[in-house]
Length: 398
Ligand code: COA
Image (cartoon, rainbow, N blue to C red; front, side, top):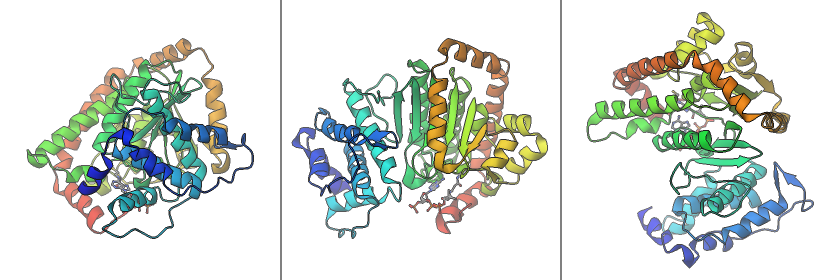
């Protein structure tokens, strides 16, 4: 990879990105009319996004360039079925890996992501784009693990590691915190969380446990604890309506923080799983407080102690989910509704949310502190260590 990175890090203006995209075989696009919608993206918008790419002045970095390449290929050709290039064919091998990593995400989803990503790069350079600034607060950095867009008064934070089922890495935790800070300040009325690909999120990325810093396991646990505390705090303090559009299965911390959202819409394909004891860990995201409160102790214990996985309908019956939609109409029904909600008076919405939450804020912060303290201890335990190792060695799945 080092050799490849060197090759790809040639000056931006020396058309490396363009070579990644343009020199690749681009089949003629088989769309019906230029105005036909492709999951919200028209052929024209896709073509415009292609055009905008060549206007970028700054090199967005190898990782982003590879992502653009992969999305383009997926959008125009579908999943990668070409033979894997040989080991010594470094550049084509990383390009192939990037495309392959998108798995089976549908072409319309890839087109949408391609337009979102290009739009965010253009916006980051101060250009005009309907897809506004995917920038971390106060910096010009584009997100590596998220797609953040603002449209129709809605800021959408899309977890964007579909090949890893949107598992949350340390980098991604930090980016989500930054994206929430940014969304709290921007002009949008609603903030929406969703996932790219077939999963909503598979929870904490277990590779986070394998990156042991200099101070050993204890330092790793303490740093992880501080990050988690900050992460959950960002949800507790979020000032505007926060909505989860749960597009597929959800695991771990992506489920527990749902108790801090204002609305949770789920496709019927979604499941909700918090396998903490299975992993030698304990509850977080304030779920030790919000779950018993919303569903009663008996049902909360079944989830948080005994790893019970809920279907979307069960989660809705227990109050964790607001409403369940058929998978085939999920996106269109939910977004139609959200666009209408975003037209409501923003101050009234934010103030009403704050009234509902204000009684609980202090308690939620205390719960967060207590959960983090317990988890730091758990992360140093043999029970946790053995569970994580068995995931990587035996690929023990949930
Ligand atoms: N941490 C790290 N990697 C993860 C992950 C996680 N939480 N969830 C998924 N992945 C990775 C897989 O290792 C796999 O990587 P690979 O392609 O390099 O082998 C990739 O994402 C795709 O996942 P895969 O397991 O092939 O998909 P699946 O549909 O068969 O199973 C899960 C999906 C989520 C059930 C399974 O990956 C799993 O059990 N993950 C662990 C979830 C977990 O324990 N989360 C923490 C909760 S506290």
